[in-house]
Image (cartoon, rainbow, N blue to C red; front, side, top):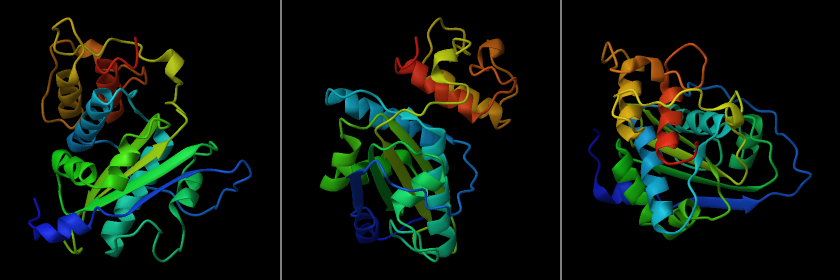
Length: 243
């Protein structure tokens, strides 16, 4: 974990952007290429924000492939180019244009939170919850989809850079949500699918553990491999997003 003065971490969480888009918005056509596999902290953030929304009478958010791509690109770009801003440095692109370039083309409510200085999901979640604008994005009733990414660069000012993208349309997974999940995701054989199962699948996909008690339940999206995407879907099963 990178140690920073508290004032840096606080100041790094004060920018917020949200909008409802006009129907004729064009695609910007800029770059969007980044590693989008999810790690344990990113999965934990989804659990934290959905618990928070539930406590406030709001529905859960689901991972969007396109929003994850946009978040991953943004966090990496900030970390590798040592800046902190919603507009993409060097290429001079706004966050709405980035979402379009990454494939989130729905004309709907959009928002972006960025933060820097903390490696963990809990600390970053608390940064955003303590900021009125960021908190409003997390509790926006119009939002149904999310992308989450954190990236570290030891040569940058803040070390860790987080991005969350929010959208008002669930653009789903590939294959579409109607065909998911193919299996229960109960990899620890307890008879229930919980966040513990998601954590086990994430560890298995990273080769940190060699076997799962009910390994046949791990490939919930039916793509013949066990990956962080399965862990993300299992986490959403545990939140009641899939029957």
